[in-house]
Image (cartoon, rainbow, N blue to C red; front, side, top):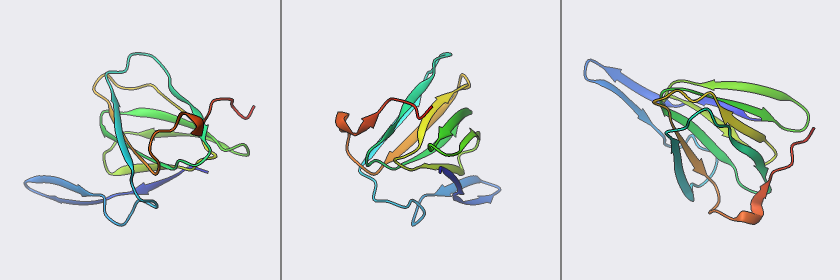
Length: 121
């Protein structure tokens, strides 16, 4: 099942500094970000191999997750929250705020054959 981790953040009068170091449970091979989303739903798939770490750098979005046993909905609305999605996690992202920037760190390079679009139910 997907799970949230808190990213280490240092805060003082100058602002915030969030660090991604020794917290992501895989080696990062690909980084992409989603922004400028209208009312569309993104995602709608799971993977054979790829693990993903999702961080909403700005604004907010909602991620629905189904691992074939449990379903859960996560609100990402802070750049120090990171949602880890395992390969078995069928997910979709929606309710993007107008200013949302969702960054995704992936354990694998893009491979069209790695995607499974059919939901569990």
